[in-house]
Image (cartoon, rainbow, N blue to C red; front, side):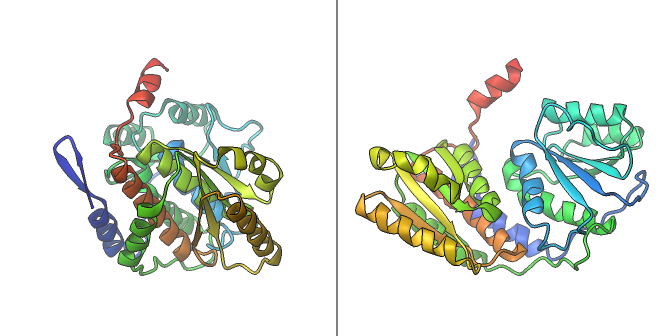
Length: 327
């Protein structure tokens, strides 16, 4: 699976296989400046691909054994949340490029308020500056784009949480059969159709639907949206019969013991078939770290193949670059 970009060849399969072959354990981390406190609130700041790991770790907080008295707060705004406590709080800034204005504004605010800070980025110049200011900086390795650094960011966050004693469980990176995931993604992408893609999941697994949406937006340049069941059935489903020529639906199923969710899906599928509305089912299994990793790999590879099928450049972002330039 190869994609040409500026005369360089991107082999996504090899990159994914290599990453998970090399990452057999969480990275070792230590703090040069941060004083280990009994942190009760962790503010995770990150936008776009730099915010995916934060969303994923929040979704998996029970599965990774996050302490019940620790509150994870996602910040994807121009400034930090209001009314934050002055004690027992830690701000973790994630910016792959180290240049995202909204995220850097939050960093400056945290510095003004003299809050404990950790920064994660590939930007070594930013890292040197922060270390001079006695702020801990953890470098990321450069990859294709921020969204493809999800797994690297996730393992680093887990290592930081472990070092700060925020999680109780022993975290091991599972051994994954990447070839099977890639084969499945390729097969479904070959048969998939739809100009507008709608992705549905249960509320507790909404991150996976959101992650797939992000990759479809950025890789394939699709109008893709995610929503949760049962809420979507009570509103947007009304428009599906009228829009069936344009839409392709994806349902992320799970092996959780929720009879109402399963019964609802059966009713939905029956009526979608009656209306000749195209839909695809993807079952990722039970909610745990291993299956979330598998599904995020699937999402990335599936979106890549759809982009390739439609001859889209997965790295093209001219329109967004213009907006950022004018911001």
